[in-house]
Image 1 (tube, rainbow, N blue to C red):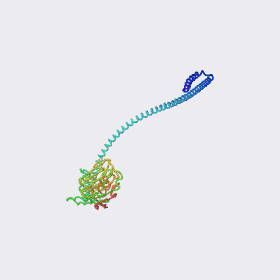
Image 2 (cartoon, one colour):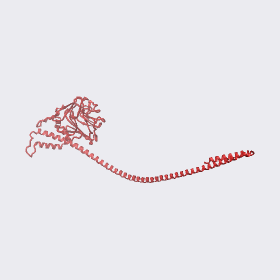
Image 3 (tube, helix red, strand yellow):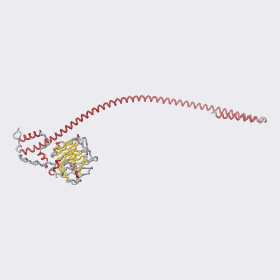
Image 4 (spheres, rainbow, N blue to C red):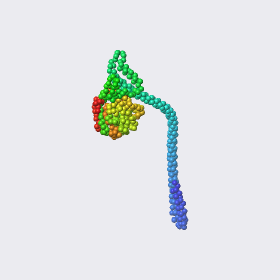
Length: 454
């Protein structure tokens, strides 16, 4: 700010001595020549004074400008301080609110921790209670299995006793032709006394599952000849008396083209199953009666026999590789036999009935399993792929009649009525009426009674 004044003063100090030195050198000249010199000096002095005045005026102006700037700066600083104080006040308020909220959160977390501890204790008590319930259920399941086994044995006993009673009732009129009417009212006849005695023998029989020889012969269509001392001859009973069995399918040979497709198949998953049919074989082994395949497994449900198996045995497969081997040796005699294979996922129970007689049973076979829907169901061939992959060694050769499938467990009474042609159990989901495609040399025959079926 003082640089122009110092420059002018320095110039003046340098210029005056030089000028004075020139004036002194001209003292010997005339007076008329000195006058311009003083005038010039006076003018220079006036110029210097004017310059100094302007310089002082500029300095004052600058000082006033600096004072104004300093005042503005002080005002700005004061405003900034006020703003900062306000922000600090807001920050303190926010900190207090945050601290208050944090205390609330801490109290809530503490309450939540207490609730979680109580909940964990409650869950522990519930787990203990559930464990006790599982143990009780396990014990109850064992008791139920024992009761079911007992019931199965009793069912076999009842069926055998019923078969014996039926055979005795049919045998008594022929064995005692003169006892059709009672001797006197109120007194039992000779035939009734004999029947009561036979019933007492049946109650105390140690082997209730073995039917009498004559009843076994009756199931096959013939009876054994009478003994020489018998009072009358046996009346032969023919299978033609079993009627209303529906159409029959004849599989003449082991061609892989001999196949029957049942449609629409299983529309929903099966947790219970009953497959019943009249069967007559024409070869030394049974072959495949039924095969159900899905994209997941081509042996979801199979009833098949092979050349490599024991003659007359059949594999009952549910969800390969699980299977049970069932004895069906009576079917190899070339006669009509009624077969029922029953299974339930409850405890994995299964039953095999042949000619109304329970010949095999078991448990824990595919317990809790469900046969899925949407597969391919065929008769007479074993599928290695959906609807194909047949093998002639597994083909069925013979005849089927009255085949039906239920999605439930048939009780022994229903099996007995079905086998004797008395009543068809309700609720069948598939029959031979669902045979949508019959291939190869398979023949569909409508026959009123079994003796008329080929």
